[in-house]
Length: 303
Image (cartoon, rainbow, N blue to C red; front, side, top):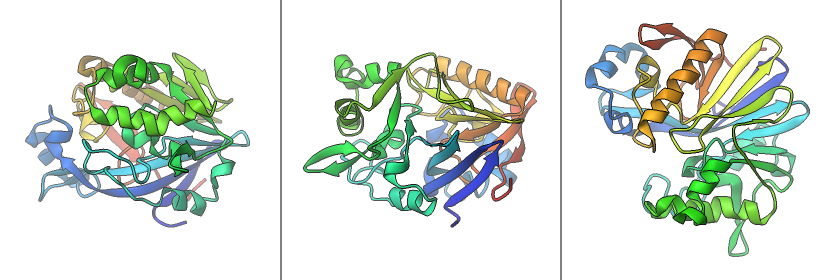
């Protein structure tokens, strides 16, 4: 596999990372507004170059999907931006063109092979490849898949709530091209609280970033992991969990949820797998003072 398609085993579950893009994403304190320059500078020795570009003071991120082969089924965790979308309020995603399906093919996954799609929340960069353009509209990319959508996000971003209270035109566009077609195809499953996918995988609500933000927990054999979506955008939020990203809709709730999830991850030695970390992409943490520290980064190509 190439450097953009990496794999490792957690118990009996194969985890494959598909990286569509990585690079400098946004001003560091634009992405994490509460973080001070000293926090980044004091940790430059390990934040750079995978998570921070000091010369331009920009946070480094990745656009990626996780493929889980579990219990004889293929599960996708988030589906990136999608090609050719109208995203006028998100210039970096407007008319995006990437090779997401090529990455899946390199991992041996064709669209018809996917059994379950997990959208950890319904932001643009987590639902885009839910659908592909067809006959002047949008059709589900994965024709045999069950799409698991957080009910709270579906309600908040859906038409009944004016597509996120009408605050952003992009929210309407995202719902119409990447979520509504899943409903029309009868492939959407709305869930709240917890939802067990199989003996190894369970979804749990983790609100704050969005009303329906969720995490996916993996437990197989003695291995544990938690796929935290956008609970984390940068490792500085591990050091100081009170720091939210600029995208968190309910900051107080998001910070409380982040601390709760990280506390459990440290106590149970779960591998923490955020949606957008570049570098190794996943890590184990330990408690340190009021926050946490990196214990080790994920290793690929071993079982």
